[in-house]
Image (cartoon, rainbow, N blue to C red; front, side, top):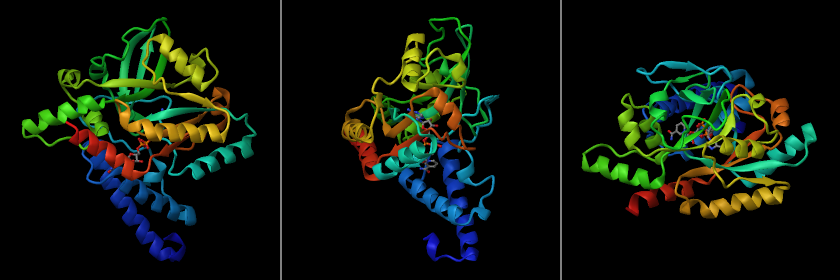
Length: 331
Ligand code: NAD
């Protein structure tokens, strides 16, 4: 599309694409009620990326490509994230995944060690502990400012109120709704004449952003934690070590991670979970590949929106739709 366009046409198209993406983001993040499939959003986003790559002078600070998406709801106190909560860059084929890995290898001549993780289809949360006690829980919001949802997160059983060591630490990860809870919640909503949630991700987001924590408590949410705000708070020096350390502190982590030492091993992991995803009790929408060394993560840093040391491989859309259809129709 971008190659046949004049700059004047590009200005118009960029503005149309941004308008669409902003509307969809509002429906998705603010109201937990998307009107289009993620694949439609992703394809439109890629068109915008293509045009902004060809015409970098059209990039503005408020473009969807330059900001983390979520909006905050009124009714919740705001939390300033001292260390921003970022999104992830994404690729849609294993070729693009290999290009990402090759690019990193060229620029930083790094040892080939990547931690492969499942991309949990939920919403990002941050948990702050002081002396080992949970003092605050928040959403990602726009990456800088999130919503204070401490009371709601305290109702989620997998979140420890007290860690096994009395440390100060801010831990990040994903809150999700298991497929079985999603099916029964939507059944209940339909019986009550309420609109069903479009998918488990939106159901989880809607359930966490409730003004009444009792509603959240009934929604049977769960969590997998996979990051800390400041790696200096850790004893481990690798991503995989961090996961083990988080587990020892009392957090639930996803056990299906794997340290890959070659592109072939990364591809095997992607294949394995592309096949297994329908059988998992929670939704995944891709695979996240992360540089395993935390020092290298730190030196690679991040753009305004995404870390340079990680990438998300997104599953093809037809499979994403099958999963949601299966959950709905196997009731
Ligand atoms: P994202 O969901 O594509 O990826 C980033 C997020 O992945 C992180 O913030 C984190 O919350 C999560 N994640 C899950 N498992 C992880 C792991 N193991 N390690 C690290 N992170 C992990 O990005 P986003 O910015 O949250 O949302 C953008 C996406 O949302 C789009 O690509 C689109 O698919 C969807 N979206 C859809 C609509 C719509 O209308 N359908 C609108 C807006 C956005």
